[in-house]
Image (cartoon, rainbow, N blue to C red; front, side, top):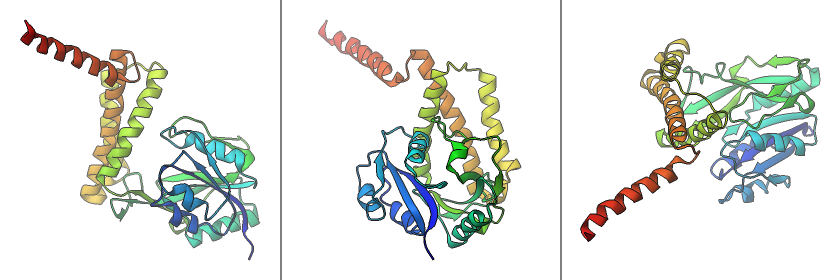
Amino acid sequence: MGKLPISVMVHTLNEEKNIRNCLESVKWADEVVIVDMYSDDKTVEIALEYTDKVFYHERMGYADPARQFGLEKASNQWILILDADELVPRKLKEKLENIIEEDLGDIVSIPHNNYFFGKLMRFTGWGSLQDTHHRFFKNDYVFISDKIHSTFQERDDARIYEITDEEEGFIHFNYVDVEHFLEKLNRYTTIEARALYDADEDIKFRTVVNQIFSEFRKRYFKLLGRKEGFRGFSLSFLMATYRLVTYAKLKLMKEYNTKNPSAKIEEEYNKLAREIISEYEE
């Protein structure tokens, strides 16, 4: 059988640990487009073993702008967006083939089988059918915003097809351990806080508190995180912490009237240090 007329688009930044497995799972695709944010490991070297369509995009800290750039480089009508830490199992590949042959839709919602800290998540918002995304579509039906974690902008006349069999979903090695989660939490909360600062978002204490507790209640109770024991509890709490950290960073930015408050705070500390040291010079 020939290759499927699909352009697989993958964005990368220092993904040498994941990219080979990812690309091995899509060797059946007619085209693979890599958009790399100037990795300084072996990501590009490995990617070039699978495709010569490797393009570069400035580092943004998140994937959305690179994804839209990649769409503009793709040559096929059908696009599959894939993260470097995701794989396409055979059942999903066969399902995508069927969707094309039968013309079942213009945009396809795909389940994610998410692995957190070594285990497959069933609930907490990351169960396969709780976490579905429009990742397979005809190119002229979707535009990707450059805002972090934004939803795709889709044509009103698009036919949406939902894959409901979790075995026909992505395999996503989401977070390796708690350190990995906290590393991304720190990066993403800074990006979101800066976006809120640019939008001149007002901080209301009651609103922040409500968002923090609502996030925990949603994940632990509504999305059944309680069924996943301590893992569900801790992840629900960490996502509530995500909200707190975002607004704590925004508060500092507003206090110091800059998106980089650490520089001004360090200036204040150095000024105070000089005053303390000068006491010995009197």
